[in-house]
Amino acid sequence: MAFTHPVYEYRRAPELAGQGEHRGAIVVGAGPVGLTTAIDLAQRGVAVLVLDDDDTVSVGSRAICYSKRTLEILDRLGCGEAIAAQGVSWQVGKVYQGDTLAYHFDLLPDSGHRRPAFVNLQQYYLEAALVERAQALRNVELRWRHQVVAVAQDDARVTVGVDTADGRYDLTCDWLVVCDGARSPVRRMLGLDFEGQVFRDRFLIADIRMTSDFPAERRFWFNPPFHPEHSVLLHRQPDNVWRVDFQLGWDADPEAEKQPERIVPRLRAMLGGQAQFTLEWASVYTFQCRRMRRFRHGRLLFAGDAAHLVSPFGARGANSGIQDAENVAWKLALVLRGDASSALLDSYDAERVAAADENLAASTRATDFITPKSAVSRVFRDAVLALARRHPFARTLVNSGRLSVPAVHRDSPLNTPDTEVFEGALVPGAVAADAPVAGPHGHWLLPCLGGDFTLLAFGDAVTTTDACALAQGAVPCRVVRVGGARPDALVDRDGLVAARYDGRDGTCYLVRPDQHVCARWRAFDLARVQEALARATARLVAPTPVR
Amino acid sequence: MASLITHPNLPAPDDFYEALIDLHRGLTEAQSALVNAKLVLLLANHVGDTDVLRAAMAAAREDVVVASPEDSP
Image 1: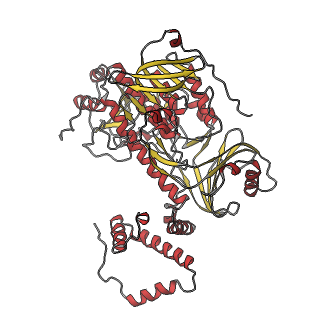
Image 2 (image 1 turned 90 degrees about the vertical axis):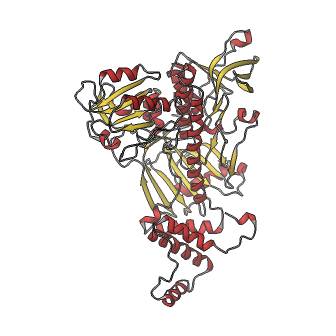
């Protein structure tokens, strides 16, 4: 069944009749990042207005790979199940040189995770689900075909000029979250920097509809016989739609290559002369790797493609944008409630700029492998691919895109550095790992952590009195116990919570509202937890004294 | 921490050098370039020490004059 684009109703702004009031937060752009930000803010009790210059969801499938972390974020926002159920789950990638399998990777080899490594889903489905969720929230207002045409700020407020079919009006707000995409009109109208590099290569996306028994895997070919000297990527989407991405080279004519009479022969060469398919959508693109120098500009916070652009190889665009959204939402909610100063928003800049750099480095490295920029770079690339057939070490060098993993905010000013020894990956700054549990909120750990600060405590070390003190603190913190004798404690049914957290009796993890770890200890100490909470909300800037 | 060995370490230097030249006998320039690249990658993996590899890269690049700014890394 083909997707029918919804048309969201334009409504005349009350401001045009002299009504309306100053707002806490306005979001520009109703794409995946803007909608995620709005839903997250609204769930935290912040009334939010979203302005979009269009009245429907994305045209074309666009971003199609959503990571495990994105699904976990969407779970918290109330639409993870819808997306996971609709999408095509996958975790295996295969890389071919010519027609020979060079190697394959498994992105989620161990069990005990609620969500798969990735789901593939057309961006319009994601956006439609997010709009539906936003519409269900009383404190989200979506304004379609309200185009932002002017932005100005001073110490006290942001003023936003909006153009509509009925005329122009002004809004004011404390904070503006700018999620208006790669060409970000707001970024441009303010003349803000967007530094980086353009890659001299062109790619054709052809989304085709066909019935096929190809497995749901990511397949990538270097120099296949059906498309010599270039690369090809294949992904399965729902509705029997397949994404084929052909590398064309810099000299390709983008207009000519978009025509079906050019595309169909390429597909026939790949799929065989007898293959039955219809062309759904095609696009020829180039890409750039660049970012703004800072993501916070006073009362403006830039997120997603407006702030940073990567190549599509690695699915790091939409996924990192959704992580931006979740990073900014809890901080902005605390600031708007008066529970944190605006200094907390500087950590949005610090953390997400570092994350963008990680994504840019991964994306640039993949691009250098897929599109070698010099003769010697091409020789090394071919040498790696040739060696990969026989020698396992070379397979680790093959780079067809390193797929999105959530950034570890290792150097975040919100972290309390470890003073004790821990094994495993859950360092301060990492996303809390999911694991199967038995408890009042179902069968998985992450939903039990919820969306506030949470102290995950192994055993019975935290008394009821201490838990009350944390719950009533300046920034409330819930205690979730694992193991131990209390009836409300989670049961670590497969031992995977203890394994993934290196948890022993007494171990405590302080987890932020965005489910990133910010501190951990081998024994509970109320004062240390309170200090870490203050640091994690930018109410404490002094370095940790060494104990 | 291991450092790059630059004192003589090959038991039979002339034999090694002959084998290296022989390795390329009958190959086109493109094939030779590929074989050299594979050799670098195989040896790099065998060494497996980032500091040693970086020191070797720096030593290999030493005294090589960049002709124009566009060629610099």
